[in-house]
View (tube, rainbow, N blue to C red):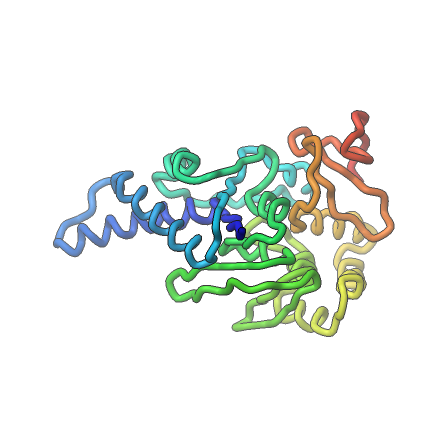
Length: 287
């Protein structure tokens, strides 16, 4: 049995805006100006058709769609720059699509975690289905559907370490090698600064000859030391924790990324309190 683990966040925006574009096109094709917003019946049909198509491409026997909750543990992690401060436009039917999805398909929301965290936690031998580049850090089978001029990718498997290449001035990669490129360059969409002035071209030069995860970390440490001087370790830890998708989640606590050899740090995803283990009830100070 193959299970498709679908990033619902991407679909909510994609279908919402696609329906608005289609509604406008229908009106203009008749020589009319579009009035208001598309009826939800159009959105519903497009949503059902798109998800059925995507799941069919993965040849999965079953599927689950994940959505991000209202709260996010990364808001407690970020201190250099607040997490996801860039406000983006939402489609008119944003709330309606989120409301109807659980009535159409199996869906899961966990407050404090993002949709791609839930994919990471549940993926196993299934297929990670998303157009979000962050999901590519995961070991396993990936599928990204076609959209406009961007072709479909997969389904294909990647190992833990993965790969990294520069294609049209953009980084394309998978696994830990891609993860460490993100830690280095940051992510402007999510307000993660990384190391200033280190973009894809510099990242590929720094990481292309690394052959394992430890070498990737060793390669970016001098860059962080140069950029952040005495604060380099705390900033690198922060940036990695923001980029790193959850791999372990117990008792409402997520295991945060840390340097090899460091004691584990678990964070309550709602309160931001940190603990030495997921069973602990006495918290500490985030380091």
